[in-house]
Amino acid sequence: MRIDVFTLVPHAYAWLTEQRPVAAVLGSELELRLFNYRETTPLRAGQIDDEPYGGGAGMVLRVDAVAAALDAVYGGTPDHRVVALTPQGRQLTQAIVEELAREDELTLLSARFEGFDERIVQHLASDAISVGPYVLSNGDLPAMVLVDAIARRLPGALSEGSGEWESFSDELEGGLEYPHYTRPAEFRGWTVPDVLLSGNHKQIEGWRREQSRARSLH
Ligand SMILES: C[S@@+](CC[C@H](N)C(=O)[O-])C[C@H]1O[C@@H](n2cnc3c(N)ncnc32)[C@H](O)[C@@H]1O
Figure 1 (cartoon, rainbow, N blue to C red):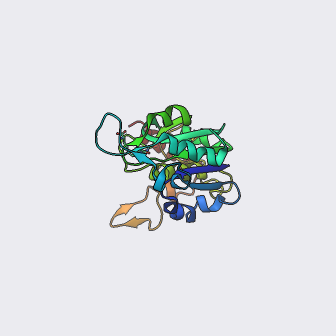
Figure 2: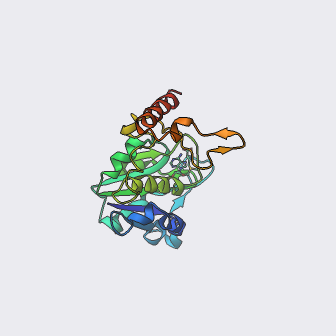
Figure 3: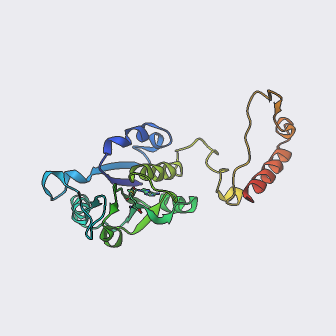
């Protein structure tokens, strides 16, 4: 899969690309390309945003700057999905992550300040996705959230078995994962449930399912 991110801060992604699972699939299952709007903007002095029509605070990402960036890379609007990251988009869920992870190519558009000129969302993007009902300062943390969540779903990203029985997975009926414990078996009088120390795998599986269902009711 190839993910292209359009941003003003390509260098900010260095941390992400050094971490697993992204690092584990880069160069094999995942190609990640980073493009800076400033390098292709048709405006002078690298301008990419402007004052809002109608007045008001803040700066708005210009449609011509984003169109020029897409033209430079794809020779026009790409025929694969182009996701505008915006708090006004469809709220991200694991089901959306699974859906996007099945794409061969994906483009993510990040904005800052007041956000996108609406024509970018309407005409240049195919999807608008939010990472939650709160406002962040720019679309780069949301883009990294998406890249990380998608990378986990690519073959070879995780050690065998660790990606299946996770919160929101089909294996757990879309619910939350059961609790985990590790050594020591007792700490400050806080003990580990006996069943997990029993070695009875059938009982452990039953207990985990019960716990997962109980947690998912809230
Ligand atoms: C300060 S926000 C703009 C908020 C916009 N003025 C509004 O009220 O809806 C700047 C940019 O950060 C990104 N962003 C902020 N919060 C986000 C969220 N919850 N999900 C996805 N992107 C977000 C978007 O790219 C957005 O255009």
